[in-house]
View 1: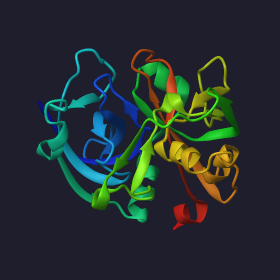
View 2: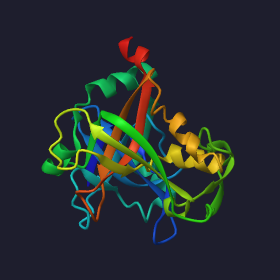
View 3: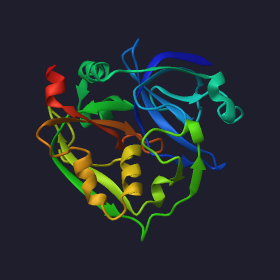
View 4: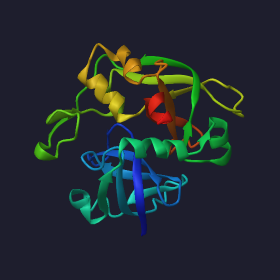
Length: 252
């Protein structure tokens, strides 16, 4: 067992259903102490929000050798009482959020692959947005009622949809700012950010507007891509979160 303290949640993927039917998400956290990323899973969907500070007790999954990747201690046995292992702190202010994004070193996809790094923050250029249709329609899996514990910006009773069951999958094509060692300088990666899938759930038929919601082409905003690698294909990276903020906020 390992105790990870003073973590801040930077990104979280859209929920997926585990083999035993639990609905869970995987999160990316930045250590305010060690100044490095950690992958934490499985996390119940009503636990932890973006920019929350938290501590957690974890253990290694012998089947997952990715760097800084941890499974919550006794996550299956204690699924309904994970407050035994997760201690929630405060939420960071907007100023603190931007300061953290400033301090995290920016990298390139080539550097991540070379060093077998789990996560990285990339400043993209020459961005293009794509929607790839995978299904005839979006298939709702489960409707949850959280009452007073409902997540912010979600309906009190809302549908949980596995990533693979959405009509569309969003992708970003981009080049890394900086010297990327990849032979193909243009990268195409799926976005798995939960907020993107919530947007598609709430606004069916308007999925193309997602690019505007992400501020991908808004000159007033700076965009950073939080990317992470896959379990069964560790040299393949996906976009965990599209982090965006006004350039004037960064100056302040």
